[in-house]
Image (cartoon, rainbow over all chains, first blue to last red; front, side, top):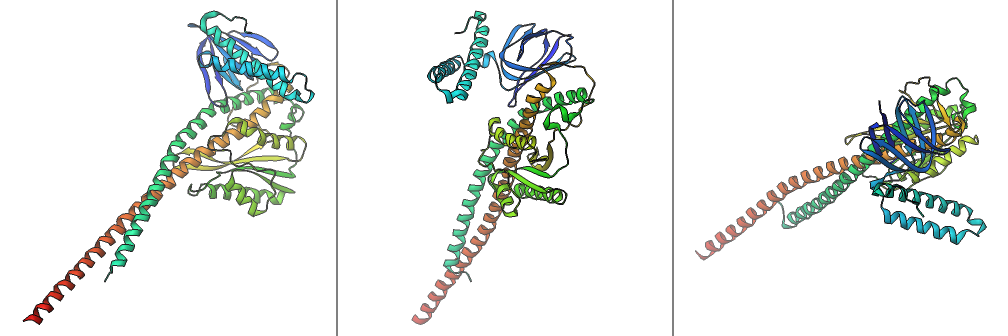
Length: 146
Length: 297
């Protein structure tokens, strides 16, 4: 019996499938893999790449925080934000990455800019994950994203 | 007998009512298109809210044995000294009885709690509710207006933060949220729901499941509960917006129909008056001619 997966955000349903054989999950504590008959689990998500293995192949999804609950092979992902690979606009993600890098370099020495720095670092992390997910789909595997 | 001036006055009135009908018709169309979008957004937010409730319900099965007060401060039940209501209304009127009904429901909730607690405060979201409560004299925690027709989740964060902080530091003991729930385009229902303290969602079967928690249950609740509160408020605002647009659409359609009916009634009066005027003018001419002919003879 495969896993039933549903990924939802506050704005919409991102993915709903009943034929997931294996799910790689970026939790806040590290990456885990969920197989059918997994024990009941409740975990918080980090920023990272989720990969759903289905009969058609891998479905990479960019995940930006949230929760996952697994009960009786039903996986509920409540993400703060999530995008399927096909939804990611590469040039926009690249622009966001460059902007975030610029902000980090510009502010790194300013003491009171700590919160802004944190924001910029998070923005950079999100942009890098989007690029990673996008490139995996593009068939180049997951190349090192710089 | 109608004079030329009266006929002209009726014509002016027809023109002005027809213009009103054009305006209300345009407003109806705008509301209809906004309603579709607002409705879509409300429907698309539901799966998340439902999953969230299901997840919390599952957890409540797990936490049933434990003392909820010790798990997280947002679960803590205490004697209510300070009651607050997040009151969601539209910024604009011309939506039939929508805002009035919501204000009435909120006022009766506030008055019902007033005798039992030290203090009842309101946190209005939307101009119509704010103006109403400003007149009523209930203290306000904060006010939020101009969130727009299609608010985002981030618009909700400050509202959630205020009530959660006040709840945790003991300034508030119970918080409700009131909004017009969208049933269908013709029906909106004023709904009042408890937000804090967080209670196990109704209708979810609490099973005893042994969960693995990553990280600890406390630290998961630490992020899950605030998200749950934000989501409840967000969902309420989206429902209220869908209700607003549909109520406005219906109200404007009725206004257009009424105006068109008035135009046809006025047109009838106008034609009658015009014909009477022509008849009387003809009579004048015929009478004058007859008198002339009599004079010549």
